[in-house]
Image (cartoon, rainbow, N blue to C red; front, side, top):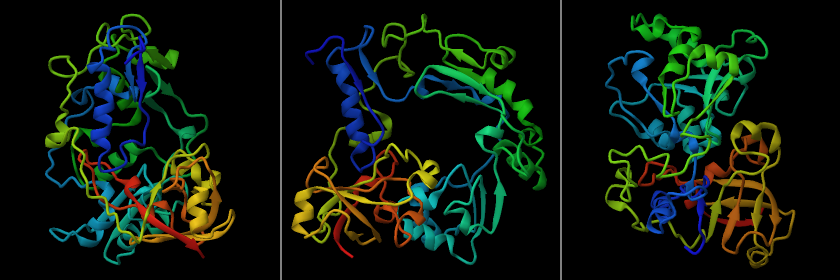
Length: 383
C-alpha cells in the first residue's frame, strides 16, 4: 500500500487447498484496490502463459463429442466407484498419476482392476507405466519438433529435434492421428502430420501484438511480444481479456464463494499436523524426481519432534486415514510448529513402503476444481 510502484508476485502452491482459489483472488484484487496499475513495475505477475490466445478454429475442425469430463484429481474414486457407466479404458499421456494424483492408494487400487484396460504412453517406466496393459513409447523433448508458448517470459519458441526419434517413439499428435485412423474415423484431424500442424499452430497464436509467420519462426527460433514496446504496462499498454477490459473482482469460476472462507478440513485430533508437499530444488515435478529424489523424507519442527520423542534421522511413519509413508525424519526450525513437509513428485521407490506424499492427500476438490494437497492432516511416530 505504501510502495509506488508496487508489484505482487504470486507463485504456485497457494491454490492447493480448499480455499486456494479464494486466497489467490483476494491477493490479485489488491493491486486494483490499491491503485497499483497503470505504471511500469506495478500490478501483479503470476504466470504469463495467459497472455497468449489460441484460435482453435485455425487448427482443425472440432469433431462432435458427448463424453463426460472427469476431474483427474478424483481418478481413484472414479475408477473404483463410477458405475453409470463405469470407466473401462484409460489412456494415460503426459502424466504419471500414481505419483501426482491425490489419494494414491485409491488410484493404485483402481489401476489394478482386472476389467480396466490401461494404455500408458510414456518415455520411461514410471510408477503408472507399471500398471499398463499396453505401453507405448513417447518421444522426449530431444526428439520432438514443437512450438512452445512461454509462461515465464513473453516469447513463442520453436524447437527442432536434437536426435532422431528412438525406436518406435512418437509424438502425441502422431499417435492420436494413428488411433483415429485405426478406429475408422474420417475427421480431418486424423489425416494431419506434425509438419501439417506446425504452420497452422503458428498462425493460430494470438495476443502477441503482431502476426508471426511459420517461416519466420523456423528461421529465428523465437518470437517476442509487441505491447507496443518490449515491456508491458498493465492497464496502459495491456489489458485483461475480459469483455470490458476491466479487472473482474468476482471471478465466475468462484461462483458464490468469492472471498468466502470455507471450513471443512478434516481436523481429526488423531492427525494434528498439517502436511504440505511443495516442490524442492531437486523435484519441481515427478519427471525430475525419478533420480533427483532417491530418498523421500519428512521435515518437522523441533518442538513437534520433541513432543513425540523423535530425533533427527529416525525412521518414522507418517499416517492418516488415507495411507502411511515410511521414511527418515529431518528436524528443522525453518518449518513452523504444527506443520510437516514432504516433497512432492517422489516416485514410490523413494519411500520405504512404496507410498508417497500423495497417499496422504485427500481427493477433495476446491471451488475452482483444483486438488487440495495441502489439506492433508497427519500424525507422525517412530517406526
